[in-house]
Image (cartoon, rainbow, N blue to C red):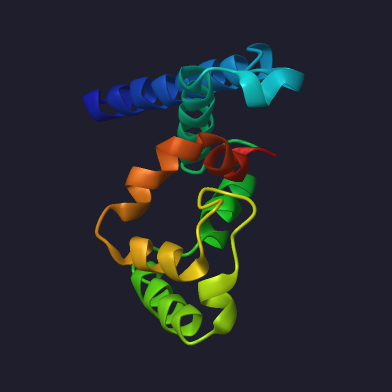
Length: 144
């Protein structure tokens, strides 16, 4: 067996072991169960990190989970389209009465009005600053 083939086998074994370990952590670790609202932020973030890493690894590892996780990633908007969508959304909400008076009831931007949310999304790294504050909403994307 060539050295490249050995390295490929080692890499594939490592990816499968990592995927299996993450799956075990997600399945066997109680991330809060019924008391999910009252658990500490660190525990919420640990669940988010495990589920996101699992999705990213499972989408690229040839397992039974690959098609499902690939579809999960492909259903979300691509990075190139998101700024354009955010700009269009800001224009629409700015010229809408509801954009200024409506209050968002759920999600990461709970309590914000749509114009404020859409304007904040236009700031570079703005979304990344808000996501950790409401990690549960972000984690729901990676749950089955």
